[in-house]
Length: 162
Image (tube, rainbow, N blue to C red; front, top):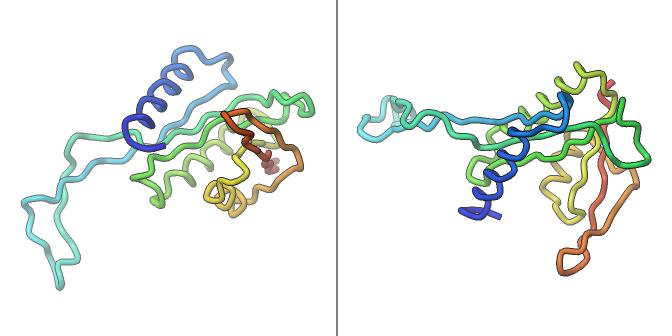
């Protein structure tokens, strides 16, 4: 999902999570990027490889991650957390935002005494599966099927953070 529909979804999720978190162990983290303006500045150096830049418009939220104690019945919510959301605006992927959000999530969860994190991923979302697997996550054999007009399979991934 991209464009205005994605923005509306993000705003709704943001508002719900920020306004009324269910507990102090529920958190939302954001990634921001400074918007730079390079117009009107001549390129510097050979081949114009460097240019002066100036901030314009401040910072923009380009990603978010949220987590909470795990709710799946086979998990112990006192030591297992669930990463509920990890989203990065498609226009800002491959800039390290996802990695920074993931690392910050792990840091907070360790501080809170969690030893493991799980998350649910669409089984055919190879980009997210690859990203998490490259960060040390793996399938834990749990799966579920959502009815979204047609059956959509999800797999649960887990990682040890102790």
